[in-house]
Image (cartoon, rainbow, N blue to C red):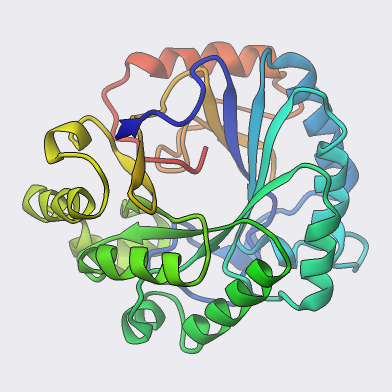
Length: 305
């Protein structure tokens, strides 16, 4: 069965709190992680106040980076937890997730994640069930590290989802990833498509999936889940959990955005056209601008929000 998982009346966004990252993933949307601005945690809290006091209805936040576990405040690496603890206080927060490569993760970090009162999922980036394919896209040793951390997260009772960006390099890994996710006790796999931006535009421009290859992906999903290819066609991204699959349509419009480390807002991480800058622009003005993109013929893919 296929359904649109996000509530139509809600608002969701991906919050890139840092561009710091230990890896040089060849599909990365960033161009220069080292030179990017990183705001102090108190500034992030002010931005959170502006968003959460303005947006009506339930809000879903995916905290990410770069690698969010490497975000620092006054030299302390607990900055991401200070922010997520603050976000947990808002009554209209419906779902709080963290998207991570697991770089910088250890048992203390996992214990800190367990203490977050409203944490829904830990979304772990993994590109294939094949270590060689995964480490080609990410970095040597990432597969081993991520699998070890997934085991520790699941053993700690946290809900884990694997997140994968599909390109020519790994689109044939769908069945293997779903099997791995099931065997590791996670809550499935989120599949999105590679779009050539930043480093990815330089190193993987020719790796965008063709319609034929995307059809192969849909066939693989239909072979796993209780659905048909025709049911899957309207959607741009998928969350497969066992034999259940949820589809996400294009999310351009007033119900989602991407928030960058310096406060700049994009309608989507894959549509890097500024819609304003928080907190200066004001969230009401940004929502009006985002609404203008709802009829824009852009390709937008995602459960990232």
